[in-house]
Length: 291
Ligand SMILES: [Zn+2]
Image (tube, rainbow, N blue to C red; front, side, top):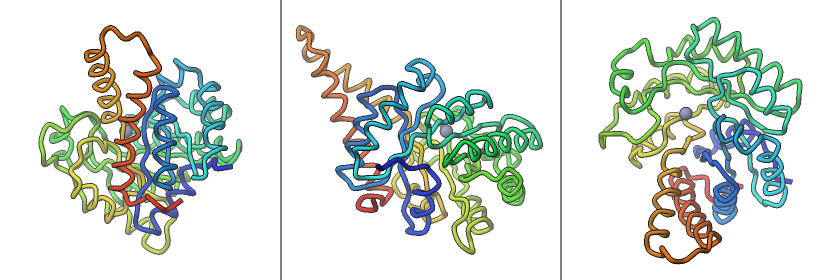
């Protein structure tokens, strides 16, 4: 059995100065690609779904596939719900067998963020061995990345971050530090590395308790990834890159073989490409060989 929650593998990662790749998927082929890449690399891994694909495929279906793949995998595999803004759906996914849940109440005012996050934490901990991720600060798309970084108030305040973690009891924490969802428009996105380092020092300086999450992994230059790792990033979320890989590979395949009507071959091409992208991230994050 290699079913794991996010916190347990991230604590090991933070102690060992590497990070866990958390890869967003929308179907079975992509999920298999992620698990196969992790097995190839002997790496612990996190599979993530956002709310929409979870509702489209059905959370029970996703969990059944996840449990089947994870049970047979010789590496720890976590199934995490990404950016869920509804407490009710967080609870439903926890009941269905997700092993990690993100309640994203970061758009709420601070006290309400704490209240909602704590409610999900208390519930998930009562259901079973389920870790919960909370977020503080604004984590936008690329269109407002620079604006957010320049607005001090939009990023996670370190003192408030510590208080947020203590009052909510979250297992893993995503402070906004300027990373963004989508594809960065510049080669040098503005990221507040020191802020992450400071929060990590305050939370985990005397032993890893609450490992930190970096959102918006797609397109971060490798030296940025290394620096974020050094500063305490223990989970890197990668979504947009896999979407592009899937769609570009599928498009190229169909364009090249327009008269071939064999969906299995399209799936195989997509799976290979995604496995390659995931393997590359695992190498960058240093988690290869850590399972
Ligand atoms: Zn995110």
